[in-house]
Each structure stands twice: as C-alpha cells, then as structure tokens.
Amino acid sequence: MAMIDEIRKARIEKVQKFKDKGINPYPAKSKRTNMANEILNDYEDFEGKDVTVSGRIMFFRELGKISFIKLKDMSGIIQLYLKKDNFSEESWNDLKLFDVGDFVDATGTVCKTKTGEISVEVKDLDILAKSIRPLPEKWAGIQDEDMRFRQRYLDFLVNPESKEKIEKRAKLLRYLREFLWSKGFIEIENPSLEVNPAGAQAEPFKTHINAYDMDLYLRICAGELWQKMSTIGGFERVFEIARAYRNEGVDAEHNPEFTMLEFYWAYATIEDNIKFHEELFSGMVKEVIGDYKFQYHGKTLDMTPPYRIARYNDLFIEHVNIDLDKYEDLEELKKVAIEKGVELEYGLGWSTTIDQIWKQKVRPNLFNPVFVIDYPYILTPLAKRVEGSNGKYVQMFQFVIDSMEMCRTYGELNDPIDQMERFKEQQETKEDGKDEENWAADYEFVEAMEYGMPPQSGSGLGIDRWVKVLTDAPSLRECIAYPIMKPEPK
Image 1 (cartoon, rainbow, N blue to C red):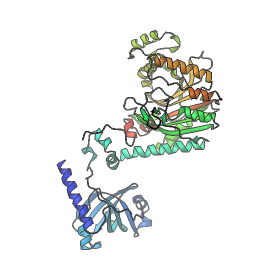
Image 2: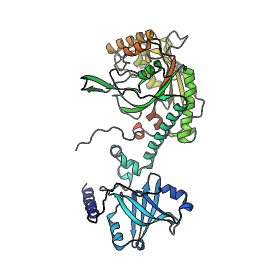
Image 3: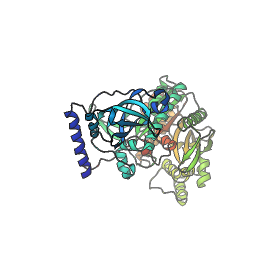
Image 4: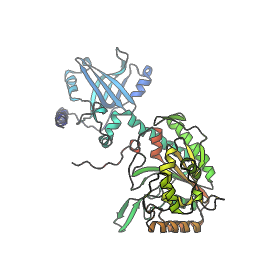
C-alpha cells in the first residue's frame, strides 16, 4: 500500500506539472482519425500517411534518443515509435510526464520499424487522461477472485478472456433480438416492480414505495403474466429481454440478479416451439462460436441439430429407477427417494419433493443437449395438461445441457376456471408451509383470462447460463459484467 501511495503522489505531481505548462491533463476532445486495427489490417493503404491514434499506454520503454509505446484501443494494440529528432527539447523532456495507464492522442506517420513491425512514428503526443494509480503488470499478481470481480475494469483491461466473454454475451443478445424480430415478434417492456411476484417458484426481493405506502416486489421472471395479457390484448408474438431477481443462494449456476429472455407465441403448440428452439439454439451457437461443436468443461459439446427429446418420467426411470406414475402417496415416494440417496427436508410437498429428486439424481446425468418434455402438472400450474395422461402431466419442456436448465417452455394454460383451481391449490400448499417457494396466485391475471386468451406456447431462457456454456466459463459471475459483491470494510 505504501508503494501505491508513493506512486499516486508522484503522478499527482505530474498532473500539476501538466497544468503548470498550461496543458489540461483531462481534456474533453480527442483528435483520433483511425483505430489501431484499421492501420494494422490495411498497412499498404496507410503507409506514409499521417494519422492520429488514441488509447491507453500499456507499455513504455525509453532507449536514449528513441522510445517505444504500446497503445491499446478497443480494436487492438499498435506500436508508437518516438524519435528525439521529431520533438523539441522541451517536448522530448515532457515525455517523462507520461506513464503506463495514461490515455493519449498520438499523431504521426504510419511506417514499419527495422524489425518490420507496423508502427506510428509519432510527432506529437498529447495527454487525454492522466492515470493516478498504476496498472497491474500481470494479472497473476492479483490471484484473489473476490478482488478480480471488485475491480472488474482491471480484469477486462489485462485479461482478454474476461473481456471476450462479455463481447460474446453482447453478440448473443443481438442475435436473439434479431432472430425474434425476423420471426414477427415485438419486444414489450413489462413492470420490474410488482404487487404480486408470480410466474416462477422463487423467493422475491421485497421493497417499499413511499408514494403509495405499500410493499412491492422485484420481479422473479421477465413479465410472464404481463406478456400473456398482451396476447389477450391482441399482440400475438411478444418478447422481452430483461433483468429478473430472486432472493436465493449464489453458486456457479445461480445469481440473485440475472437476465432472461421470455417470449409468448399465440396459436403455436409445444411441438411448434420445440422446432423453433432448435432453430434458435443451433443458429445462436453457430453465430457466437462459429461451429456447432466446441469445448465445454473438458468435453466436446455437440450442438448439431436435431436434439434428443425425452419424457421427464422416462429420465427418472432411466437414471434413478423411480416411476412417478406408480406413486399416489407422497410419503411412499419420499421413502423410496431417501433410499436412493436423495436428501429431503422435513415437510416438503409433492412439487418440491419431485424437484429435489430431479435436481439431485436425474439432472446431473444430462450433459448432451436434450429437450425434456411432459412434466408432472404439480410442478407447473400455468401449463396445459397433456392429453391422454389423466391430467398427471403438462405440456412443458426444458432444454438441458450439462445438468443446467437452459430454458423452460409451456403449452400455456388458457382455461381461466382450471387456472383458478390450480392457483387455489398452490396457495393452500404455500399457506400450509409445505412449499414456501410455491407459485404465488394472481387473481387479476385470472380475471384477464376470463376475457379470452388465445392458445399459445411461451418460453423463458436464462441468458447468463447460455453465456456460461458458450464461453466455457466456470460460473455465472464470469458471464456478468459486474456481479453483485458485498462491500469491503473500509
């Protein structure tokens, strides 16, 4: 810390020296004419021409009457070649006021050095922003992951892999929007503050609005019920890419603040949506990665379509030898699950018990992409029942990769009487304390359904998880530009 303080003091003195010379060390305007990669990629066109490049000094070496600088902008790194003959005595001496980390304008002629490196022979070097703190020389010098996420800007600056993950995330988001718009969908923004946080099994964040003196909740999904109400209002294809919030644990696959894509497609069936997702996912992988096959967690993940389709219950039979169709008594199911090594807390209801078996014993076996269809109706109160299943299963699928649920898609329930009964059943279970994370009932939504809601299929995708897969990241935090951190004690 003492060394940092000394460097800061010395650099602050340099700031004052710039000012004493009548130079603003933080001007508002740059004279940039070209990016680094423009020159590097088209040297023949730029050779001998005067340019101004702008960026951050990443390396500075003085060798008597010449100096070399590595200048970094968003496109790449270019070398600056400085000769004493090109500067006045005063200007040459002023180079001592510049440090690694400073932002500068460099004006000069494009050339190649004796070693053949494309460079700008600088005639004029102007300060754009004087850095006060030194950059880390090597990221290995900051091993603490907590510090790396706190100073994410430094992580992006010196660690190209971290920056690339965020660039791929942006590419993915652009692809999703363009794909959906090309299919006739329209993006409608929905409330992020809700009176009733419905649409998923999750613990919401609670807040308070002073103007109305009432409690509100941060949404736990990207406007599922609002989007369905939009279809009631005549919007047949709607979507939103949005932040959602769940007051739950943090691990490699979960973050309290996350990004979702949700869309609703009137008159489409669950079968239509399987084909739609296959086109969406395969195209997305090809756009972001450039190939259907890539390395993920030391294995080759093959996203070449078509993808496997498997029933939820069949996977239970395959991986844990439990046939859900044979169990009418919850306690009997719990007993068998515990014998199979499933850890269950006291007092769990049907939905959480089944979900725990799935998460502990079935899902971890799924690495290659698979559409999991026909879920038990108790897990999904907003989906239509599968015809011919005696009401036990609903029209729903999840797309799973490496045990992660990448999307959840329904044949949406549009019978308001059935919906009301399911909400009541869920609410009673919640009030009995058997399933604290059960779905919240939304009776205003049922009222809207009573005006008539078209048959439709809707889907929710976890953007952060897709970035994790496509960038081979160890956790979601690597895929979020600025993950939430506990404040450091000062």
